[in-house]
Amino acid sequence: MKEKLSKYVRAGAPETKKFDMDKPMIKQRPGAGPFIWGFSYLRMFNHLGHINKVNMEGIKPPYILICNHNAFFDFYIMEAAIAPYRGIFPAAVDDYIGRERGLRLLGTVPKRKFTADVLTIKQCHQALKMGQIFGIYAEAKYSLCGVTEVIPDTVGQLARFCKVPVVVFTCSGHHLHDPFWGDHRKRWVKHIEATMTLAFKPEELKYVTSEQINERIRELLNNDDFKWQNEKKVRVTYSKRAEGLHKVLYKCPNCGAEYKTESKDATVFCKECGKSWYLNKYGALEAVDGNTEFQYVTDWYAWEREEVKKEVQAGTYHFECDCHVNDLPNSKGFVRIGNGHFVHDMNGLHVKGVRDYDGEEFEMKIDAAQQYALHVEYAYRFGNHEDCIDLNTLTDTWYVFPENCEFSLTKISLATEEIYNEIWRRRNTERQKFKKNKK
Image 1 (cartoon, rainbow, N blue to C red):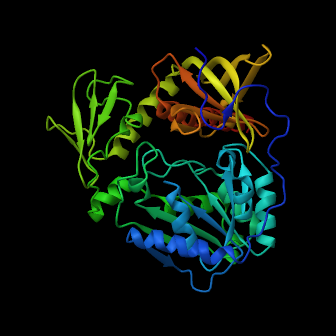
Image 2 (image 1 turned 60 degrees about the vertical axis):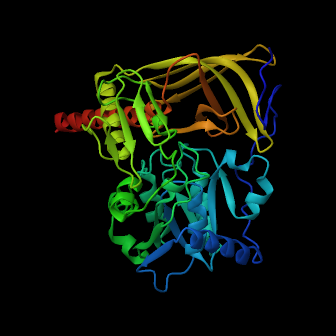
């Protein structure tokens, strides 16, 4: 039986025309501002939102705005925070599907995730020269469980290079309202808050290193939605508030089994040993048997990272599976390339297969030393709501859908980061040894 492809996915040869990544950015039309600000303020008001501004007196564009990223809802509150000004923002290429013209008119520029793209520096410089705010969602993906993800070192380098004010914008509560792993339609979380802080004045950037800038940015972006919720006593009364959470909490802390967790209503449970945890209305976990290993989802997630790190350091991490692959050449949508095999190990990410339309081979290899983090999608809307991995080069974007296996996108994501960290830890150790021996 022929597979039914999802919306915006077609069969056949990929189009030769690809995204124009260097197309001149569009300064937003003045008339769009009031509508966007009004809608954003309405969304914030409906969620009893509040924006704290720290040392922002007299700060006007151009400046760099660095934001954390918990949900699409972030954009509304950010727009309210920067009013009466607008900005230029890099956006993932799949955001442009079916709406490229509109997004470009709103001031966005396309970006392939987790690629070392000097074009971003050029675009930032142009936006600042135009007197605009240049906004960066530094994690380059939604947080998997409401905790701040990896902030690359290049953020500090860019800020130091541009010599304009550096502003940090941190939101809390957005992941609770619209979690990356679950259905948000009935959550309707009230009270949310955000803090907008001047991190550096232009003259201060002359006397600090990129490392010091990064340290300050990471400190200000630090966020943990579940702990924040519990401390602020923000209630989430939605009866199915834990459904989907097993996609993040893939490893059982009681029996150690992987890929055996499930979730229903407000409970996460392990099918292997039968243990279950209740997510209460204030964001804390409670083991039904009374022995709660982790009070917060984010602590469980941190433990999973440490477990993956052990595998990486021992050199035993390895994952492979059959898959099918969709290519995203431009904003018209995806093209099904074909079926293949995916491998993730200490060398990096590798997918290889045979194209449906002409029987020729396709292949993408990404070196582990160049991939500091990875974008994944739980129940991807453009992929029949299946879990998938987003692989990018400077010229291609492929979505890889694992098949016929047990797996966790969360583990693959964590492993990508820990493999990168381990490779560079070893390289730096070798460099230090070489320098020492040379002396």
